[in-house]
Length: 96
Image (cartoon, rainbow, N blue to C red; front, side, top):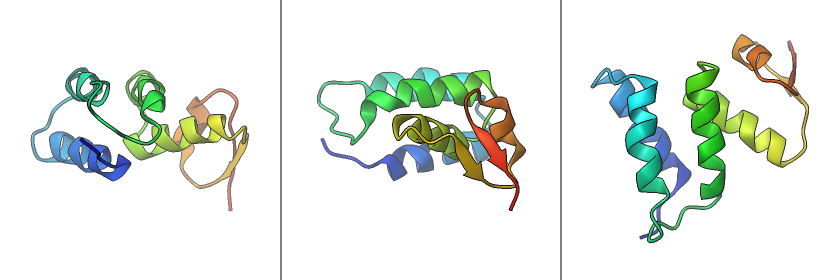
């Protein structure tokens, strides 16, 4: 089964906003599904790190995803007002 990153984003959003599920519960349910061998998802190996930052650094799912993608691309600076990135080692936030 092929899916997209956006499906994971939307599932997280729905579980968090409408069903009021804590981040730990979302990780514990979604990560094993994503890691199933039959799931084809570009960059699926990065999702473990995404969920680690999402839970441990209390980032939004999108911010955690972008932080992991930045590390993968060897980027160290991001232009944003989002102070959540200040909690991610190796990333320097620059205010616009």
